[in-house]
Image 1 (cartoon, rainbow, N blue to C red):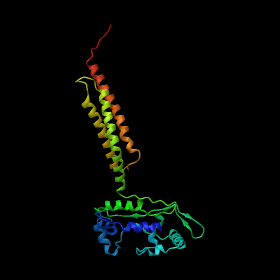
Image 2 (cartoon, rainbow, N blue to C red):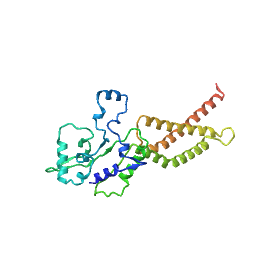
Image 3 (tube, rainbow, N blue to C red):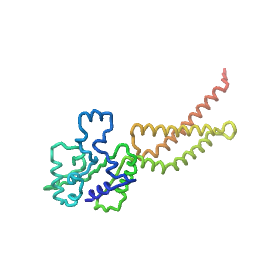
Image 4 (cartoon, helix red, strand yellow):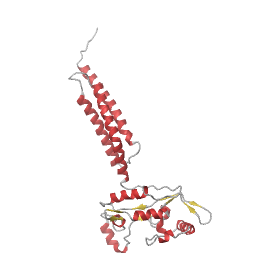
Length: 272
């Protein structure tokens, strides 16, 4: 019953006057490609139901969108329906197939069926100005409501904006540490590379060297995001790792250039 209450709460979400019916993806609006003209020439869109697209195990009982029948179900009704649907060999839509929504299915004695987890998917329009705000309210309803859960039951929620939110939160939490680390490294490089005179203080060289390290960090992040890699727990450590390796390379390059310059300006003495 908690799943039904969660689904009802999600359906009742309204943000800036936009409800679930306003932001949901529908059969006739999901595929927005150049193939639409061919699709319209072959199939009459008016003959396709234009309902909201979502996946839920409760669709087995609330055929008309009402939860009255769901709350009146008994355990025997639930076990019988699930067992029949899972054993049915007739092909089904991916949106309606309960086998796509259950994980860790175990067959018990008689009609009993157990599952360790189930998933509910609500699909939004590909481009809608209210989708981001609706997703934020969805996260709040799923994770931070006062809904009481049975013992052992946990609810996890993720949306399209979740990856950006986590990335922004991690960057915001680490930005102070990162700038402090860069400042200390810049000071350390200036002290170690420079000398106490007006010619060899090497302040600009130290700043340029550290800036190259920062550019390489941004370039590597941009390349990884472009290739589709997701932000992980190891990524906040990488800037400091690159910073250490880059500073070491600065020392090597400066020392090599100093050795070459000294060799070019030294006199070759031949001893017989």
